[in-house]
Image (tube, rainbow, N blue to C red; front, side):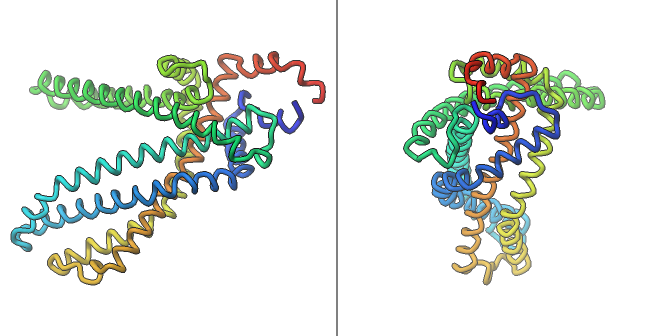
Length: 332
């Protein structure tokens, strides 16, 4: 193992500053490869996703305009109400496309992470033929994890709704007593959710780990390093959000402009209803979808770096890795 490889080890105990610097250094060193394969896989998905997302927002805006201007537009409210089915179709399409985008994004990022941290090859030496098996491998694991997470989220949401409704009926005569209980439940949900951010890197990078074991290990490592997981996800998430705003703002401006223009002219969209305006809005929607997914790369890398820190600090994973490869340290 050469000196350059030692400087890019994943399982290393890091302070907060080094977690951020290692995340940025990883992106800086591999951004060309990441952007290339993310463009190949995510741009086609973004084209389809933008179609559903754009229609979804337009349908919602139309229904909102109809409800706000029911007296102004006469039967406009009922006309928009009839389009609720179309709105749900677009919502479902948006949800499916976002799921596909997350799977593709995870596959690309973790394939690159694998070659950077777990092989002696430089990324400039890795061909697409070498990368492709890893892309399929991580795509399949990401799909499995996504489906399991979806089921767990549905079950947890139903349980949470049942608890909240039950508490509301139980303390119906003491409404003010519910406020601290609701606050406690919200804080408990946040406290439990933060460690679960480690599930993805654990399941993706530990092939011997099942989904159930990944969740159990995420709780164990996540609660032990809760402050670090929260800090890294918050700061890097904030940076990602700023980048997303840059790519999202043009689309938002066009949506708001069209909505205001429609309200100001009694439901007549005018020039904002033209083909040129609608097509431009669609192109900006593609930009915001693609930009949002590319920005998420930073969050995935950041939480993976945090996972490497937790695995070394709690389980001594880095020490174990050094022992396994002791014979490779001759050139250090």
